[in-house]
Image 1 (cartoon, rainbow, N blue to C red):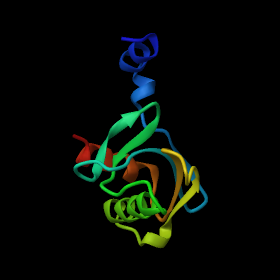
Image 2: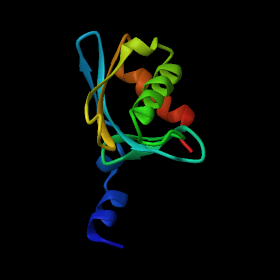
Image 3: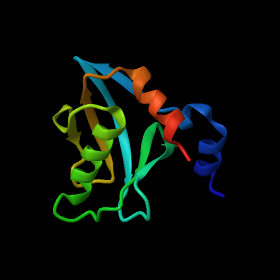
Image 4: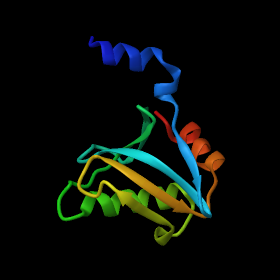
Length: 113
């Protein structure tokens, strides 16, 4: 096991989701795993929410699936979820209007595997 992996496993801060209040909503990082067998939230890694998506990372399909999944799980319209940066990367910065940090953290406790 690498030193980084040991630090990540042992450091509680590395396993904590970082959610910032931003405007009328929140901002947080997401680490996407495209082409997964099932879609859903699988936990937190390095301060980012880990999300499995069945869609491939082609022609924006994974981004659209991510927006739809987060909107469904947080019970907001799709238009309230915006990818601020990382549209072509696995790690993305997400803004969600109309929710607070507690609601995002509650999402983790109800959907993590």
